Figure 1 (cartoon, rainbow, N blue to C red):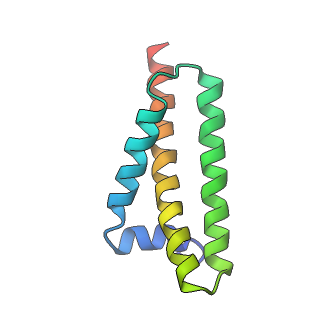
Figure 2 (cartoon, rainbow, N blue to C red):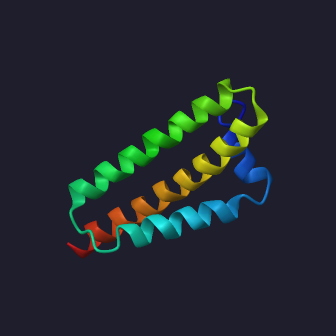
Length: 94
């Protein structure tokens, strides 16, 4: 996991709480949305933003920026999971 420091940190520490918070926030934010294409686009944007955080984490040398990017990246990873769950639910309901 050398090139994915946010995922590495997720499995090595207690940042799973941030992942769960991200899942809850994403699921609540799109709770009324049933448009599959819109949800798919939100999911792709969240994945893209998470990947940008991974790249910044690999390049950055400042500890403060690393902590901020780790926090944001973990929340975005949780948002990706929440949006994927919502996509599956919308697909199953229709």
